[in-house]
Amino acid sequence: MKKNVKMIVSYDGSRYYGWEHQPNTDMTIQGKLENVLSKMVGSDVEVLGAGRTDAGVHAKAMVCNAFIDTDMSEDQIFDYMNKYLPDDIGVNKVIFASERFHSRYNAVGKTYCYTCYYGNTKPIFDRKYVYILEKKPDIDAMKKAAQYLMGEHDFASFCSNPRMKKSTVRLVDSIRIEDKNGYIKFYYHGTGFLQHMVRILTGTLLEVGFLKRQPENMLELIEAKDRKLAGETAPSCGLCLIEVDYS
Amino acid sequence: MKKNVKMIVSYDGSRYYGWEHQPNTDMTIQGKLENVLSKMVGSDVEVLGAGRTDAGVHAKAMVCNAFIDTDMSEDQIFDYMNKYLPDDIGVNKVIFASERFHSRYNAVGKTYCYTCYYGNTKPIFDRKYVYILEKKPDIDAMKKAAQYLMGEHDFASFCSNPRMKKSTVRLVDSIRIEDKNGYIKFYYHGTGFLQHMVRILTGTLLEVGFLKRQPENMLELIEAKDRKLAGETAPSCGLCLIEVDYS
Image (tube, rainbow over all chains, first blue to last red; front, side, top):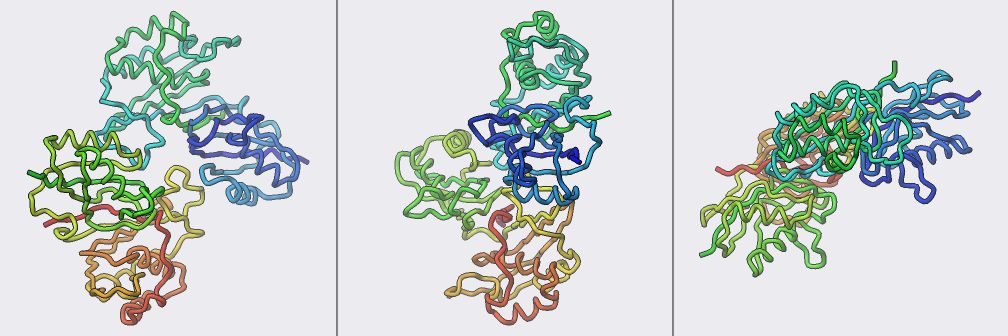
């Protein structure tokens, strides 16, 4: 009988065209995982992810699952995967889940962290994981603006997909902004996020931080449901999926 | 009149053939610094480093200096250097030093840190800055061995240069070993280090940690003055120059 293998995966997304497998490249996270699992069991395996991260986005704990026919133990699968995956993708945990577990449908929340850096010296050792700002933004103004963004809203202004047919209403129950040693971390927690939503929220908050917008502008933005009115999409390198919640 | 420009430099050594400039490649740290400074002033500039790091070794605060003819301020030089250096080399500080300051001759001590990792999950985000161990070594045994290595000794057994004509006596006044969250950090402080010395010391301590040697073996090793008897040279990626002291 097939086992439902749940995996928690970390990756440095710098070299990859995002999570989702694509026909013309093997440089996707899902593609790499599927390749290694398919070799392991000797037949094609599909890996289901809790979400799709964009090209260049990182993850500390993406959750995914795959139905595979195997006699291997959790530890053996863990060792095999980590041995054959490239050094910028790692499996942190392998668990045999119940047959009904689905990493996307069962996910009830996600935490993303977006990291900016405004320090005086160049960030040499984590340069691939931060968005470098020219100067320090106004943290209090951004915190004020974040208050308006929290809650259940139609986030159409913060969605890069203009042909989105499904609802663009989402619940963002927390936006926390930390400022420490030249690093600003934006933590977003919500039930789900639209395409590029975290990066557009961050880009918009930064425009508030650089006094190009007022915090109160967030109200109009939500109301307008027009992507063109929101801020720039912050670069993918600063974004990291931190956690996926299951009930 | 020429100014003596002292610089504190950070670099991710992964892509480079070490500190020292070489005739057939521009992929050295000294070479990159000299190129940018030479363009800045319009004539050849020589950069003097506090030491030479090997290929693949990193630095958080290498100190170097260069005599240059310029009207630029410290801040202007800082900005120019950081703009034109690649993103894995950064200048943390630029100071006009006294004419007599020499980054190598005036250095009275150096701190190196060697980082190993033995955690259960792959170190995705700092994989280029650690040496990955298969399992956890015996920390107490290594600490005991480190006690024998501290002090003023002839470190010929820990020097990779067999044609070293000068004295191989050095003072290592502190070796501190930290074990935290799967990371082992070996901090070495001394007046100076021989070629590959920190990496050979670490490789030898790890052999004690993996019970291939007794801590007491360090006494014989120091006595023998024979490189062949010491442990393997630990890989360069785990090593980082942390600080250079001046009186």
